[in-house]
Image 1 (cartoon, rainbow, N blue to C red):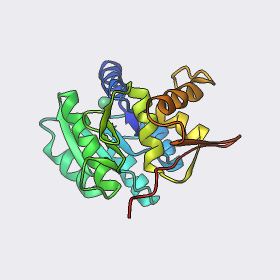
Image 2: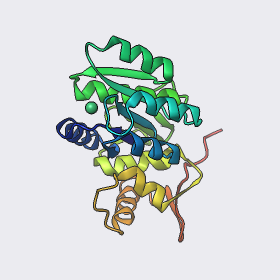
Image 3: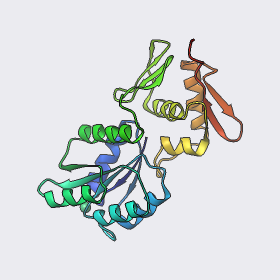
Length: 223
Ligand code: CA
């Protein structure tokens, strides 16, 4: 999952970014509304977490302009507890949810997951199908009924591939899902993560499409 975080308070932004990354969510963090609108128009985000009081362009204007431009990315607005009018206006302009500051990082994560789930049309929090099932809430993986323990980045990679099951996912798209803009990405780290997944699950599960990316192919369902 890839999140756009727009928050001009450095301490709060840092805290949210850390909490999300700990949960294996890729975060791009911007601190002003105009840059946020440009990034939203470019696309590629699953959810945007948007502060309302922002330099250059306030959050409400970002929502209005983004929706007018046809951007459908779910928006979770961060507001001060006592600003009811702001929340109402944000929701009316096309925000999908809001959270009052201060908030618990776990609640933020849960709401992000719920928005992502709703946007991708899933009622169930479980992803995949037999023999590969992922539980994005607890980072649990079951392969042929056997629990497999994966570090967060390997889990995020497996999830990104599973969401596009049977399709080729480009290396760059995978790297974007795994890391934020300012992460130092070793060029071979994706190869290493794929290698680990093959070893822990099945060598045939993830196919390399030379020069392009990877494709996860589940065995055909039993008749
Ligand atoms: Ca602010």
